[in-house]
Length: 278
Image (cartoon, helix red, strand yellow):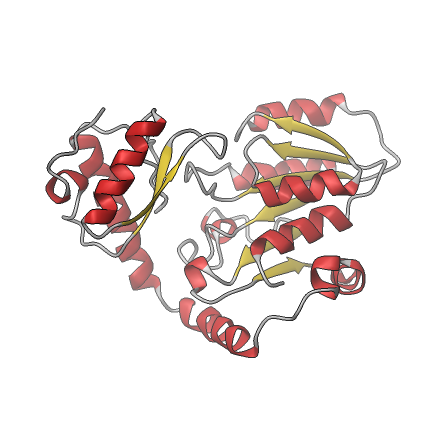
């Protein structure tokens, strides 16, 4: 697929049908919701990462003629948090639903070979359908859809408008992605360094008095709680070399999205003396 958005939209817009049921985490990506709405399937949403709530929904639903799909991400793009994938795998085995998992924000930096959080948590290949990106951790462009079922591949190739009626990914991007997939398998040292840097950033922000959620993901939301304050922080950070966008409602709670190459010592207070926790 040309983009992760297209991949999610194609999978969830084309595979579930009217009469099927989709149980989705409250915070799944907009591309997933677009596909779900287009599918015509019935949707129920459970509280973010609350697998007890998901299990209750699975018990509540009567036997269906259609298919139950459960839709989650492995690492969420705004909060950087994750569900318990081993428990999800256990629920899948118990209830027999079709599990669609987005690994876009885990590919490259989780797992012994960088394949994602399923590998990291010991639930490798547990999901029925995995969607991920060839950008982000792999540094190219485009997206992929993985499944054990040949029917999934055939359905997407023949019926997904996002694939059939779109220009194919440029050969140079495909070649770069294939090379990156091979290279990332042996980048355990780089993964360890990235996790060390993310822990150092998180610890430094907490010591400086900022509100930072717990976790070990390299996605570290800096929660400021006010749109105007967030815009001021984003402007000041860009002025000292950080590529920052201020993320505000309705996209999500006020969280700036930081992407920069910095050493472990380059925390916000030294870089931006005028800034202090709100």
